[in-house]
Length: 340
Image (cartoon, rainbow, N blue to C red; front, side):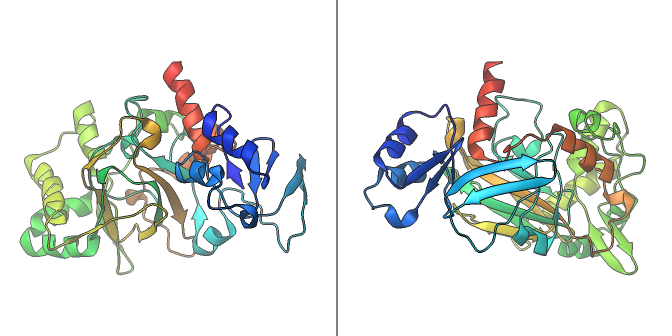
């Protein structure tokens, strides 16, 4: 099955016209890989990133009436309906929304020149070490940067222990936590809470188990907005975690190539990104798909390690749009925002 943008012209139209194996249904084209030759222009369009393909049956009709879904297709053994997370993802955890946009798959690509209000994952350049608001984070590379852009990971437990050895006084501040200020639009379209009512702790223990959450850029935002006053010791505590995390003896850089997938335990691993050189054309820029998973069988994170609440994740669903995770739809929406 291939997803394509209606506004795309030459590559897709040429490929579709020249390939008898392509069958169209609405916004989708269905490609029988056994009928495609190496010289087929469809393959060139796929490699150029104009649309994405997977083998599958020929779909004749799809209709939805109330809660009943009807699919008319060529013979198949099983039909899996994807509603927020796939069957495979369901074996790992439950997908949750990631921002006010209500997406289950986030587009990690620099679009800050189109929309300056986006969160850090849609800005370019390197990122310092941090956590995301989930149990497991998954990243899949759709398009690599021109150069650089490695995924940098570090054991949060190792940082905790090194901080305990070097500066136990600063470690205590990370257990006490910091006042955070969330993205205003995320708050307004979610629970309405911009500043969480309790300080957010980098490290916490429950029943002897250590859990970690690092989002101290939110603490710096709170100080800049006047929500809090960071003492010299608190600023030093924030800085030393980044210093340890970016020491070569602690971090590991992973080159995630196109098609590669990375899963991380977000409770015990901090992650970041090295600087990179990107393309001017937004459609050619470094592009990752990000997945946030909640493991319901794990003990819930303490409230002082959850800047985004369950209510946020639920209310963000109101902004969700059909097919928004598809790259073609994402870039079509982006083009509309650019021209608005």
